[in-house]
Image (cartoon, rainbow over all chains, first blue to last red; front, side, top):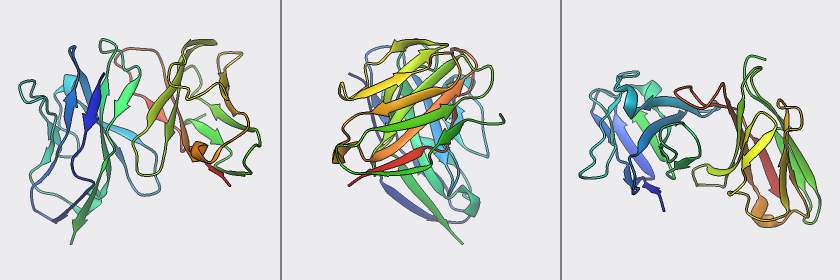
Length: 111
Length: 114
């Protein structure tokens, strides 16, 4: 069965510091991976997906199949990055169907 | 509408009561999903509709949970004889079609069962 693990429930950094939110997955097939973000009092929204290979708000994430990881990184954290971040895996051939989410990491960026 | 609308935003029910949660997806969105998010957890898949057809209900935790989307737009998630373990935020999400499109979530309905 597929599983997504986010080992850190809480992560606190100072503004300008690098940040890395960890995500590991277990899945027998070819995974489609996503990062979703929920800012305070806002809805859950897509941040980025690995297939797009894009950088959104300065964040990037690289799929490492050898380590089964999809860590989210940003070189210089900003206070507005403070939010709940969820890593998610899609398990139906890349059609964005039936996501399996991790438990989330609450990122706090201190001034 | 501009986004996915869910109602009620908050619902308090006594154990044993039936509840109905409504989701208005973005107009024209074919795919509709329900997720359950318990406190401190990530969202967990409940069920999926393509238009009016419920193609996957494998995530519904028991036969007390029932979802419908009779006309392929508005969907209702019904929970019968609510139990305390049903307390959670119920998220609805819609997508134009399966594929490379973005899943748009509603604000959720927070159910508390006393």
